[in-house]
Image (cartoon, rainbow, N blue to C red):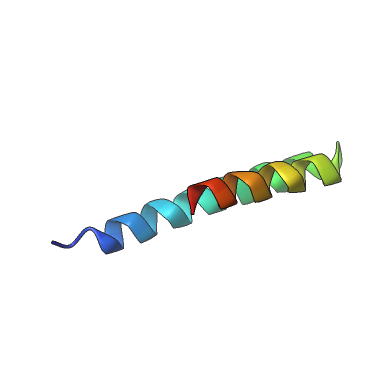
Length: 45
């Protein structure tokens, strides 16, 4: 059973994707973007 590396890589891709989203949304609405990222990461955990 070697699902942990797959889970970790998927988690890393998810977080990096949301980080890119955060960078794009920073100039638009920083606080709302951060809250959305935080809730997404928290629900992923």
